Each structure stands twice: as structure tokens, then as C-alpha cells.
Length: 104
View 1 (cartoon, rainbow, N blue to C red):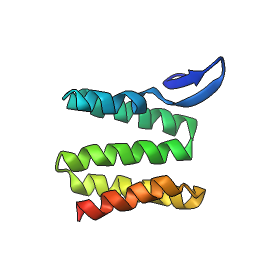
View 2: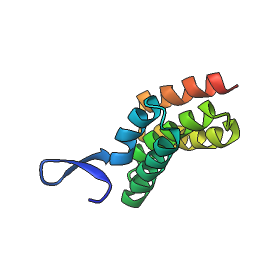
View 3: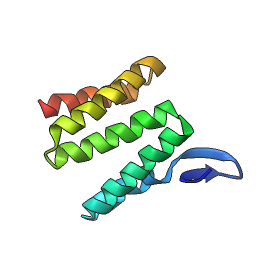
């Protein structure tokens, strides 16, 4: 499964880009972090994994907000919130609410 971290032979854990983006961002490699984040979102979309689409969208929203792109970030928060409600992903829903609170 291209672009995913695998546990053992065939158990996908999640998109590689999602897992490395935060580290890149902490190291000040913001462009690389955004590219990894987008790669993670693209992988989640290819796999049609709604929970990972929500997680990756929220990660990208945090980066965009930190970079002053609040309108784009809000759209991604809305996407993540919609998915989190449908799939009852309480931790992601709380993260969406927390981020939305600081964006306004």
C-alpha cells in the first residue's frame, strides 16, 4: 500500500506523510512539512479512508492557520468535522472545535 506505514506484512497503520509532517515542522522545514502533509492527505483520499482524511485535513488546517491562511484552514476543519460527526470520531471532533475556537 503505497504511501502508508504498514504493521507486519499487510496491516496499514496510516499515511507516511501524516507521521513525518509534524517532525519536519518542528525542525523548521515548513515547506517539506506541508508537502508531507499533503502527501498524507492524498494517500488517505486514494484509500478512501474517511478517518485518515479527517486527521490529515485537520493537520493541514493547523499548518495553514499557523501560516495565516485561516480561510483555507476553516474549509479543512469543516471537512474534518463533517467526517468526525458521521464516524463518531470524538477526539477529532474535539480537535476541530479547539482549532476553530482559536481561529476566530
